[in-house]
Image (cartoon, rainbow, N blue to C red):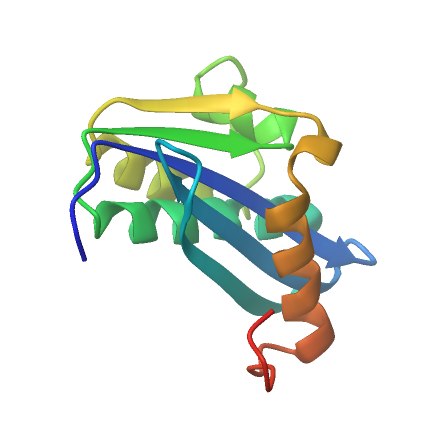
Length: 144
């Protein structure tokens, strides 16, 4: 994998039923907006917030492999953005370990910025998260 100066990591978690069948979607782009990597993960049964954190953790782990100089994390979960930036505290006992892992991963990366975006501006990660649920994590015959 080649190092990148700046990466844009778009993440989304989806849960059908909350809790329900869930998936995580991640799209990593370079600074010109070209896709670098796409990741979908079937999560089993979780809540929407847990799925959002799993997507974030997956995205941060993947971004680290590229040794970027800066990372912009774009997500449509305002709650997670506010928790990751310290505006909101995490109190839910099932979310705390996920938050701690995400915070640790982000602290190991240089210059991480969290940005809340409207859901309609995050279609790639949303599509991947839902595809992960639909396929239960199985690879599709043709990578969409």
